[in-house]
Length: 546
Image (cartoon, rainbow, N blue to C red; front, side):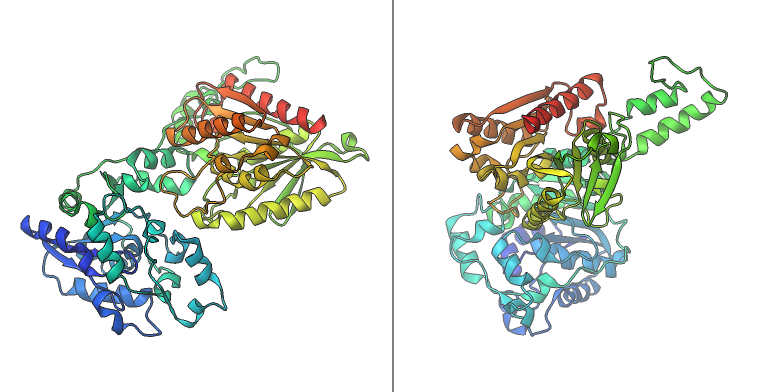
């Protein structure tokens, strides 16, 4: 028999699962709706030391008392943190983990990192704030629940009950990091995605194909996905359908996404044993070519997308490192005594804080930095700290600091600077487009997101370039490179941006790559892609030198 352990998000208790529990039990399964210490009708059990560890212990004790052989742990929102903690402690007792409309946290990650309400994040992050003294986070006020996830589909009476029965969340449950040993890393995981909250299988596939490398774990054979057409609270909006979906998850049903199997054309050439000289002629195959062919193709196919070679081969340039900033400098003989314009390249994310190489040391940004330097301008790369959706303000601070450092360098013409954004890094363009400084001669963007993607409710409203354009934005031209095979979620924001730009008189130079994918410089190193990069760079330099 299957036993479901149901752990809900913040401010709630086991009562939110009542109708789903009835559906599970009617189907012959056991169901245990959990009210954690300090939550629901156990509010008075909380003490100053109540934290994530307390809630993990709650679940371990419960799992130890269940006789059923197949235990499925279901975590919703914050509830996924104690679920993973308990699974790590009792992996032999757990048959499957279900992540209900919630991203899987990693070892060392505190729940506060994914709290969607920026005011609560700031409240908990303040070392002198109430959260530092073990206080509790008050539940949302009336009308504030959508900040914690879409309430689409929740009946009015159910929403009223949610507001009425919600209790404060002990701060320590959100601020204590999750501690995982890896003991549960082989357990199967089902992600139940609520499309009304912006999640979908298509979005997961997009992240696996084009997102930061940590998302490739979602293509693991042990991970699958199911969808529910509702908001973030399916136990209140579609409880019967949720029960059926959980039963399907327990049975191992679900869609598995695939990692892209692309081989860089340069790897194909090497695998064929034929290199190319600078004059375009081919080297003759050497001895051992056939023996190496299979191994080299396999190696090329295994290289993560972000480590594929840049599609151009600019000469190496002198590189200086200053904190999070690298400056790629033109040849000393060309630099002379006169300062040069600068192009600041801004990566997307989120990027795992321990990812190596970091963006500025990746082939992609080394390539762009060197390419700019080879054309006589200073190429600047920045490792900003966009490690989670809540980190856009911090990343914006890092970018502003980097720009200040670059403009103060005597080798840089501080009145001639361009900012070039990539992918979701384009959300950081909002501040610069809202009130362009006089020294900003151009904003460039490749396959950008000009608004937070579906499900990115944790991004502050400030970072929406589609909404900030006004008459003053016309002072800075935009060079926009579009991938013809772009993901729909990105393409929709680009069209909204183009509409807003036209309305406000913003000049946009469009560079199209009709057959290109998101990140085409790595995934599609064709002549058309190279021509697009060269044209976009020429457009940026023309505006810098005007």
